[in-house]
Image (cartoon, rainbow, N blue to C red):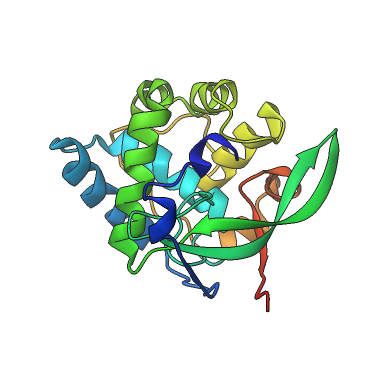
Length: 212
């Protein structure tokens, strides 16, 4: 992902930290996103918006199990506190999936990571949020693709979002979607497309990389 790679701090304040796996549950992702949206915007988010953003964060972190340094969306650069962690990531360059070293934003806590993720979505990908708020995962995926958020095919990313949300094409305010269990990622018929999209995404952190 290129656009979100812009650092929120001055270059002199950037501090490299070791990549650290920070696994959380999907319920933790949802709760942190809800709190962060209220802090960033001063408004309470709709259930549909939280569900859509949770599906995206779940997609990018394999349901929270592959989260590193509390980074919700594989956002590159340095976080508001100046921390960055160097990891291996998959990029699609010239139509080919390659593995490269990239610096990713690192955070001290789940809430700090959630707040920076929500702020990024509001400020740089605000055009996608009406679709997220309406529960249209297809529209959400399309708007994110148009804004350059990911490099996977739009169809794969949309399918992966639906799988991460529990399989529906839309998420609605009533009822609130149940929290997907980790088993839903392994048993879904869309699991192949889910991981294909992840492996092609510019946001995917493959493994931590500690350079000497």
